[in-house]
Amino acid sequence: MAVRSAIINVMTRAADKAARRLKRDFGEVENLQVSRKGPADFVSSADLRAEQTLKEELGRARPDYAFLMEESGHTAAADPGAGSQRRWIVDPLDGTTNFLHGLPHFAISIALEERGDIIAGVIYDPVKEEMFWAEKGAGAYLNDRRIRVSGRSTLESALVAVGSPFKGHGEAPQFLAELNAIIGATAGMRRWGAASLDLAYVAAGRYDAFCERDLSTWDTAAGIALVREAGGYISEMDGKSIRLDSPSILAANDRLHAAMVDLLRVV
Image (cartoon, rainbow, N blue to C red; front, side, top):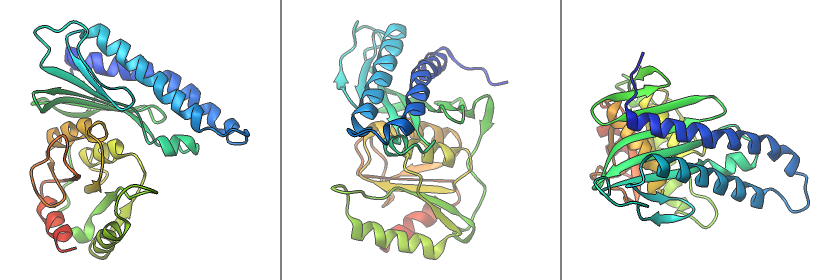
């Protein structure tokens, strides 16, 4: 059985507590679909409640860590001290559109950053009760089982996940050109609408690669830790080194990353 460090225990406990309310709220979405006002405000409230729970739990355990959170932005440490170079990066509900439509595919994402380096990550799918976690130098895990990226070595056999633009965001023509290249070269493409889980699935070998543009730091930070610790490669889509503010992300197993860069570069 995998032995979780103190910091991973802090992160998984916080994710589990926030997930309990999210699951209750998710159960109400179907009823809200027929309401006159609609569920958008409700989903925003669910997101905010989850974020507040995570902030309280993580802040109580490590008051000397700062926060970067999707809804409330950057918050300084409550009690700056020895750990003040560390920061939690949190997405309390990744896959909001899925949640809104009653699709059971969404996650809580928590990463721990130290001076620009992601040193731990947790991605929790509360519906499937799958807790993905990783810590720098300690490997990547799904619940208590060690995970690794897939061993596929050809694009023809690869299953690739993508994220697509939506109204008011991204460049549709560029995406369609990239999508056409992926469809023409691989065994299949999936678009599930939760980037954190796409990255976790690459780490677990379920997908062979994943790429998307215009994501936010909280969408990708925990997944970066997972893919790296599972033996995969992470970069921007053009092969440049990944940064927390990178305009795109490409994650793949160690055998296919270079081929994916080449495929996307010619678009």
